[in-house]
Each structure stands twice: as C-alpha cells, then as structure tokens.
Amino acid sequence: MSGHGNTAVDERIGSGLKSRTKHALNDEFLRKAVAFTTDKLKNGRLQAMDTFGDWEAWRERGRAIRSHTIANLDYYLGQFADNVVQGGGNVYFCKEGKDAVRTFMDIAERNKAKLVAKGKSMVSEEIHLNQELEKKGIEAIETDLGEYILQLARETPSHLIIPAIHKNKQQIAELFTDASGEHFEPETKVLAEYARKKLRNYFLEADIGLTGCNFGVAESGSITLVSNEGNGRMVSTLPKVHVVVMGMERLVPTFEDLEVVLNLLARSATGQKLTTYTSILTGPRASGDLDGPEELHVIILDNGRSEQLGDPIFQEVLNCIRCAACLNVCPVYRHVGGHTYGSVYSGPIGAVLTPLLQQDMKEAGTLAYASSLCGACYEACPVKIPLHDMLVHLRHRKVKMKLTSLPERIAFKSYQTIFGNIKLYKLATKSAYYMQKPLVRDGMIKAGPPPLSGWTQSRFMPMLPKQSFRDKWGALQQELASRRKEGGKR
Ligand code: SF4
Image (cartoon, rainbow, N blue to C red):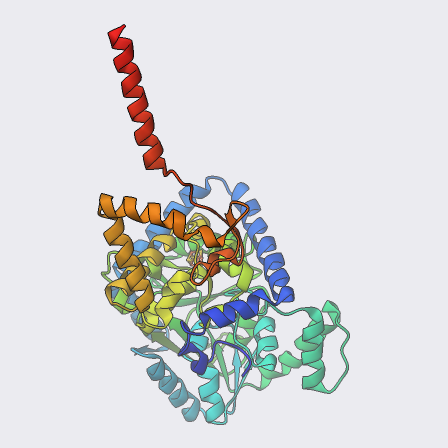
C-alpha cells in the first residue's frame, strides 16, 4: 500500500513524521497542487463570508449549537436513536472501531453481500473498513470520485473534503488506463465521463450502500448527507440495504439547527451557498415510497470520543463539523499535505483529534508539534474551536507524561534552571557569546551543529551581541542616574 493512512503506518505516526515531512517537502508537484487547491477553497470561503452578513454572529450561533449538543450528547443520542428505530431503522452503538466493523460484517453476512457501494465516509476510513471487507472477500467500491481515484491508487485521503488533492489529471488518467485497459487522455471531461459510467453500474448492482453522516437530526432521526457529486443519494437509495457509519458526535437537535450548520459547512468548506446535493433521509422505504432501501442500519461509533466528554480543554473538539477550513489555512498542511500526518484526519484538526481518539500520546501525540501555533485554524473555524490552544495543551500533556526525548528534557530543564537564576543567566549569556564564535561568519551563524542545524538549514541566525540588552539597560540607567546627580548639583 503506497498511502500513509493504513494501520501499519498509523503505528509510526510520530516517529515517521520527520521522514514523511521531508518526503513531502521534496515533492514539488504535491506542494504546488496542495497550495493551489487550498488557496482556491480559502478564497471561496472568504468571499462567501463577505456576502453572508454578520459572519461572526453565525460562527457564534454555530458554536452555541454544537456546544449545547455535545454538552447534552447522551440526551440527543437517545432521542436520535429512538426516532431512527421508530422510523423503521436499526441502531447499533459501538464502543471501538472493531465493534463497528463486526456489526457491519454481521449485516453483510445476513444479506449475503458480495458488493458494497460506498459514499464518502471518514469514519469508515478511521476503522479501516475497506481492508476488513477485503479480508472477507467482500468488494467495496468507493463512489465519491476522489475516493475512487485513491482506491485505484491504494492510498488514503489527504484532505477532508478533497481526498485526492495531491493528484493531477495525468496521474488520474494513468490510474484509469491501468484499471480499465483502455487509454485515457488527461482531460477532465473524458475522465469524469469514464468514472460516471463505471460507477453507475455499482450503484445498481451493490447489495449494500454505505454512507457516512454529515449530521443526524435528533428530533426526527434523520440522516443528512451533503455531496457535490450526487453519489451519496444513489448509494443511500438504490441498494436494498443502507448502512450509515457515523461518529457519535455528529448530531444536531433540530432542523432549525441543521439550517445553521449546513450554511456554515458549505461556505467554510468550498465557499458554496449550499452543497449541490443535500439529502435528508428518514427511515427506510415506507409503503408508497417510490425509492429507498428496504433496510436502514445506523452504526454509531464512539472510538475515543466519549473520553473527551467533560474534559474542560478537549470536549470542544467534538464540535467539529469537518469542513476542512482549518486545513486550507494551516501553513504546515499547505506545505506538506495530508499524508504527512500519517492519520486519516490531517491538518490542525487531525493533529488534535488523532492522539485523542487513539489515546496515544507517545506516537500520535507528536502531531501536536506539526504546527506553528499561528492560530489561523481558529480564525477560519466556523464553530470557533481553539485548536491552537489545544495543541499547546497536548504538548504539555506529552511533557507531563515524560514522553519527550531525553535531550529535549535536559535542554528544557537547563533552560528553566538558567532562566530562574540571574547569576546563571548572566554567566550563560556571556559564555554563549564566546562559544558561538567558531560558528560566526559575517555576523551570522549560517551553519550550526545539531540541534541548531534544524534552524540554520532554512535561515541564518544573527550572532549574539557582546553586550546583552540587560547590560545595555543597566549601563543606560547608571548613566541617567549620574546625569541626574550632576544636574542636581548645578
Ligand atoms: S476544526 Fe473547525 S475548521 Fe477544522 S474541520 Fe473542524 S469545523 Fe472545520
């Protein structure tokens, strides 16, 4: 598997971060492609904000709705589940990813399923459902175009809403050529035409349609799906069984609340007023309905989410509506793309969510360092999640758990001792001036030894002056005092 999001690589999220970063930074095409598309999405969002009235008020409203829902999640989950069941569906609460996989397999076995048509579902990526289906000999076909391209390339998504952000037309044409045996020119129209024809058959032949859920509406038990390709609608209505796999936090209480979050989601994700297809599905096909599945199963996954409930710092991460606006503005993501994070969830939200969901500070916790802490993610977030603060808290957690490297711990301990003692501080700044001398060229340190080399690889460091600011300040104070004294004498 060439992607980075598979289980084997997930285990090395932290220790593989440096090499993946290096790899991505050397991939000029990837950097250009990611920067081009994220710029486009970001500009679309900014334009949409301008024309939408009081954006701050909308953000506040979105935040209030999400915070209220998460604070009362037990109540709304109960209400949602009751309404799904009343409408003729089935609900399964799953504690861990493997429970959700087993539940899905049971449904597949009962229905003797051989083919599953999938709409876009990040949760199914999170639990590695495709790999499990493959092991059981069940064919799973991604029907979202970006996901389909990645399935052919055997890669994982590198962006929350544009999964194949790192691929160009040439690469896609080659993938389609390999998969079909026909030759394809790298032309958007031709490639889209092929995908449309190819995927249409799967909608009709699939035994099960599987989707995620953008928002579940608690007051009715409805599943809301948004897409720009319409595949979500096909997958959820044509096969006779529809299975929804959703995170337990993806709820809103009412349709009135849904209106707010859908407005925020479309505008923040792509700058659209509304996503092209918004489907609201309530229950399986009822008598008299012209279409719809005969069975509806809703798998609700915890997988580390409930651990965040009640946490004064991290509960708010569950407010996320997966719009990807934070990815599009993050200077780190924009340079390295999503696969560098080694996790299904990338960018600032991924750097916070991954260690929390995996409850792994040692490896996944390292993602908290993949940030400049500039706060651009918070500014862009439509529900005002303070991701930059959370990243600092994660770093703190890692330090408290003594999970940082020994040299780093020694460095910070020394820093603390020196900066906490004025005599040591003065001695250290004086000696640093003399110690730096062998490295200084033209008043700059241009190539330092490790760990300083991490800095000097990309920029020069000005040499420390002989006289520190503190010394200069002291001398100035003395001079002023003596002048005052002299003035007084006259
Ligand atoms: S954290 Fe905010 S900006 Fe990032 S994906 Fe979630 S809702 Fe969107």
